Amino acid sequence: MNKLQFYSNDVCPFAYRVRLTLAEKAIAHESHTIDLLNIPDWYYKISPTGNVPLIKNDDDIVWESTIINEYLEDAYPTVPLLPESPVERAHARIWIDYCNTTFQPNYCGLVFELDESKHEDIRTILHDSLKYIDEGLAKTAPGPYWLGEQLSLVDLTYYPFFEHAPVLSHYRQFDIPAEHKHIHRWLAAMRERPSVKANQCDDEFYIEAYKPFVEGDVEHA
Ligand SMILES: N[C@@H](CCC(=O)N[C@@H](CS)C(=O)NCC(=O)O)C(=O)O
Image 1 (cartoon, helix red, strand yellow):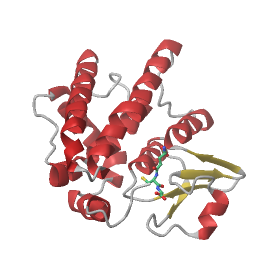
Image 2 (cartoon, protein in one colour):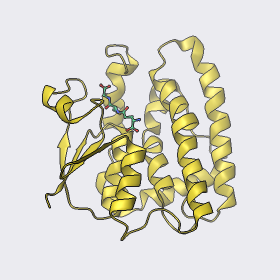
Image 3 (cartoon, protein in one colour):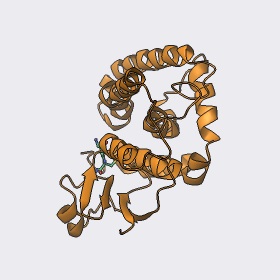
Image 4 (cartoon, helix red, strand yellow):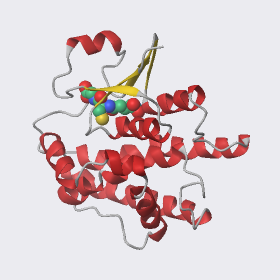
């Protein structure tokens, strides 16, 4: 069996979800960086969308970060990242769905929306979303993780966006309110994970990487 091939880019929060899952499950792999401002032709031959992340495991090709993480959970169950009971697994997936359908589109929307007149509305939605998340985390307090004592795919789904928070602060004057103490204590626990420590990027890296998008030099897909 060949080593799993992982196609990603350090600035992509979706790819970071998968990078963290690979690290937490200690899955041997080879990593390839795809230049997102100049996606090579050969990548379109293996990727149906041209997006990162994507993994190739022998002849199996899987894309979409949430689906890749589920695939890795199925294919490499030794370190489980979903709870055992069906209802808890369902609730984990509901949180992941909330990230993909509500939290992340508004979080990234605030960065990529160039029409300033729309920012205030997005800020309001984002504040509601953060309040909802903080209330959710209060139910599993003291955590330390999203679902309680065990790290799960829910943590790895959300964390990358929170590591990008300096971008919102720098370009959009949006900070995660200090009053959301459950979010902040969850973030502190995540920053202690060896998987995060080994893969995290610093604030300046993200701020610089987002610059062409925020300044409208490059259109976001
Ligand atoms: N829903 C996808 C989103 C992936 C995505 O948007 N990736 C971006 C980078 S963060 C990308 O590859 N963009 C390529 C392009 O814009 O051409 C997932 O969860 O994997």
